[in-house]
Amino acid sequence: MFDSTLRSTEERSPIAERQQELSARVARLTRVDGIHQSAFAPLALIRGSVPTVCMPTVYQPCLAFVVQGRKRALLNDEVFHYDALNYLVVSVTLPAVGQVLEASAERPYLCLRLNLDLEQITRLLLELGDHGVAPASPDRGLFVARMDEALLDAVLRMVRLLDAPQDIAVLAPVIQHEIYYRVLRGDLGRRLANLAEGDGASRRIVRAIEWLKQRYAAPLHIEELADAVHMSASALHHRFKAVTAMSPLQYQKHLRLHEARRLIFSEGIECASAGHRVGYESPSQFSREYRRLFGAPPRAEVARLRDMGVPA
Image 1 (cartoon, helix red, strand yellow):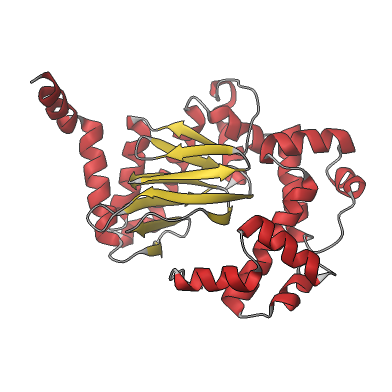
Image 2: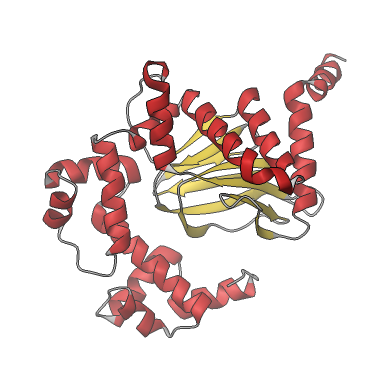
């Protein structure tokens, strides 16, 4: 009796009602599996009807709000679970692994992805001033935080706007600003703030990541990168690994292999040519490192993706 009364109370709670409305709206807006770009450019809606295997990917800076189902992200040996009660924050570009754990045709995996703009967040932090976020030690550029009612309400209002296209241009940026604010004011908001603020070490790591993204195919000289972001080589290595869970060289290697995979799978480029284009001089080294990251040589791994029906 007590359990049924408790469930009934939870079902009537404001947060449960908002979650039910949000899942119904996202399900209606995503009739088929895949990623659906919304009328508001930073926002995408995602649907999946089956659990997935572990899929290496490159996470871009974003907030991921699971509406229904459950997913996990793996960063080296660290695992981050997120669901309707816990959202994912990715504050820097990170090669990682994603896996949908709970999904079915009756209850598909539903997710909202809102891109992060660190420049907007920096301006917001300046507006907050002395009323900013609570201090905390810097940590990974990927973490999971607890959803609260105020943040859920803002996310729901953002999705409601998709049914009022005439209002999106004016109101969606306002709600996006509020969502950023709610995340910054949350228990783990300082982790995001560290990467947006001023000229601190974490912000310099953001610049180092951008430097590597622009030059991933060129040989990496750590002293050159350290000079570019005004850090010592040892400090760069230490802070880079604290944020990304990998060294700059490992990070560059992952970027190269993910781009090669995209070239082979999406553009039909021959494997050896793709490896050369991303900076590998030795086809055998490229194949060996590709297999180590993705679990199979390039041709076999791409064939597996196509057999799974993954869109190019």
